[in-house]
Length: 378
Image (cartoon, rainbow, N blue to C red; front, side):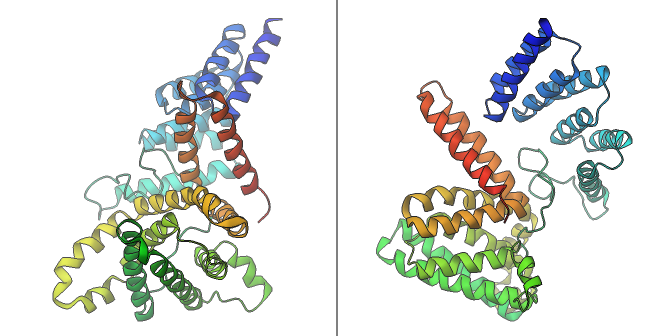
């Protein structure tokens, strides 16, 4: 009887976890443990809930308790993930190796260990005078938690060229003017919006051509599906043809990606700058140093644009942008991280005591819908 009661608490805990009610999940798993304290699954599940709440010490303690009852790959991964979030990289690496000793064919563990070892190697490299910070480490979010593994479609700068550098500068200025016009001169907003869209079409078309990705056969189209530039080219053309009204978030993430791209054309831009080199150089160096931070911010604006597009852009472009962000989610780990972070923050707000419960119910349904769409075949 006690075990059946414990199992019921576990199932309710799983439901709360799936609905992102992590505090409730912790309580329900704790009640399951009270009725069956020797079940390793309950401790492992509670560790996962603590992990989502960023209670990393509790997550480690529960995962290790689970291991003491039954040694499993999943529990070692829970320990490793929490240690990684605490920046205890060597200890996290050791846990991943223990997980591999239990299942040497586990590709997910292999991928995580490979990323972690690369980060450790970067930390040890002689050219770094300080340990990697959240803004410079390629696999760590600003809260110290690990990013998802690379998905293969992350933002890639165009190869350095005069045309690429010139287009990056043009997009930078047009993006800035568009953003400023939205706030200061709305009468100019439409003009700068359409100018920005046209500039983005040219920029990403040139990027694809310079990288040899303009498709000539069906095999090339498969590669196109995961390329940032091909997706931006298509969504920009769609926005132009459908006469989509100005989208501030769209302009914002275009601006940030362009700032990252500018650092790739550093030598040409400095050569053009002449006597203004000393003014421009610190900004380019800052963009280089904070590349991964900027990519996370840009991805956050991409995800927030979903809501503004739904509210202002009409059915056709809404469908086009949802397809765009769905594909970006599948192939870009920064977008995956941004969606998870946005859901966590909105859930914290909608589950507050002053909010009617129905608000959180529909918020979770909205995010579940987006997630289900992202899992469909691209």
